[in-house]
Image: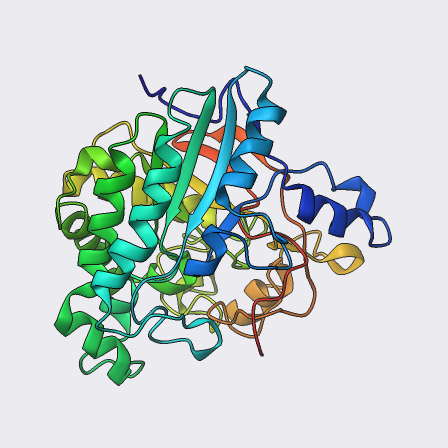
Length: 362
């Protein structure tokens, strides 16, 4: 039977290709033993396609290596499912190989072969954590219709239903394997932290969990901040703080968001997801692979209380121009190392996106 938190009492797979790349960098030996996600970002990756982080190792090669690392003890194998039709409809840098109408290819040429391979390892000591379709479903909330950020591509994916159907199919097929734990991607606080996005996204996640053969029981949890830069905790200011009568929410940086960081966002989203109908035992993952900020320039306290912008900008760890920015952000660094059960409701901090790997053109 599945355990409540797959990360507790288990080691986590170290990708030997990424580990060797990390060790080859100055100072990289310090982190080369850390676990990272294995990305299946195209059909060719299943058999091995000379990726920077997987080399010529296909999924079965990685699983065989994971079995060796496990040596009969529980070991988490982190697998990223990332190849929806019309993938990343709002982001040209990360769109995929399948056209917006190619749901059948997604199911038969991508998900089915992955499920067949994983099923061969169901009786091992591996706990396979699948993170399902990064940066997909929230696009159907924030980048459609009359939104200023709407794109024709996201409107098309909303209309044809292939994001919802694709995620549902992945959840159903992978969730049928006894040692697979599905975690659905849930964006980050700088994307869906506003009222108009927060509840609507949770409702859409529940819709996808009931689509194309899936049920909410196929969802073990959700992951926030995948391949993103949002600070885990902003310690120098709070969403409830005020400066001279002005709320922190009024600052240019927070911009009326309900959250200032990923931990508070993930914990609140978990409660909202339960209220939508998901099991009360669902857990959250937070990707901390590139959300460590500051180095010698990291603020040591709040900014001046001259006005709310000075207060927030002087104290915030996240040094981006805007919390919606991604793609190789200058000044970012490694966040918290992978850790099991670090906070209530959080199954683990993970490095799902391998540190050092480019996010695309910027």
